Length: 113
Image 1 (tube, rainbow, N blue to C red):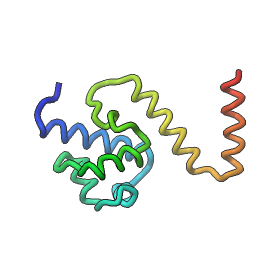
Image 2 (spheres, rainbow, N blue to C red):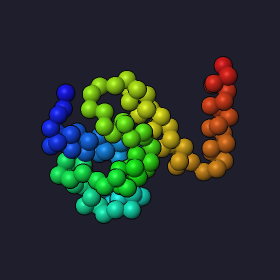
Image 3 (cartoon, rainbow, N blue to C red):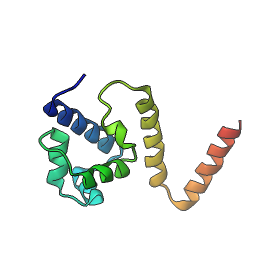
Image 4 (cartoon, rainbow, N blue to C red):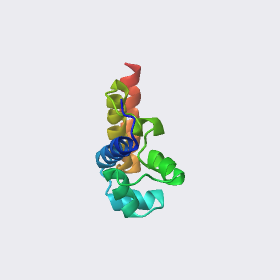
């Protein structure tokens, strides 16, 4: 288990980076979404600093993950499932409206099968 502050900050930062890169976001884009500086994101990811509570909640929101996942420092099968969900969300967010309609019909058909 992790007990010291330095290790917690480092592991938290690694998780932020993991979710950010899976969404294809740059540090600058995530900073813009979280209304903070890119130095805040960089410092968080390297474990040099820890974000304010405002930025903390915005990180979870913009990384499309529950806050508790950012604090998960062990292996968790729920995270693997969540990673698949994030990939689906990423692809859907990049689609045009007509493509989303088709994807929704396909997903409904798969779910009903």
